[in-house]
Image (tube, rainbow, N blue to C red; front, side, top):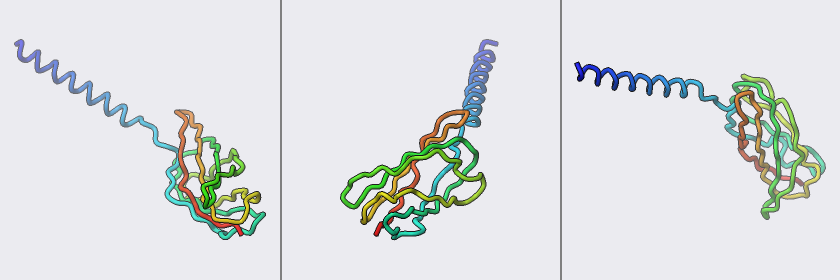
Length: 137
């Protein structure tokens, strides 16, 4: 009888561990978007104009998003690109066309960096958008 009770206790503990693990795994939130690549659509950009890009991503849900942006030149000098709060485009589209204000940049080669901060009800997500290289002339 004691042996059956020991096995029942082990079995019960095993079921509890599996149920808890499954519940945690099942409810782990995924990020609202996964970015795959970014393409410059109008590089070289005439000096004083905006950079147009196509951002490929898989967006699964809407959350308010803010972005932090910068451009790094070929010498490693970093220049801020105006930040913004924006909608991020509709769920279910493969890509988003967006324009960045690079009118203040001098002629040269650059890499645009963007950090996106999604403020979802379940948590805040920080996502690095893939960098894109472009030229201002």
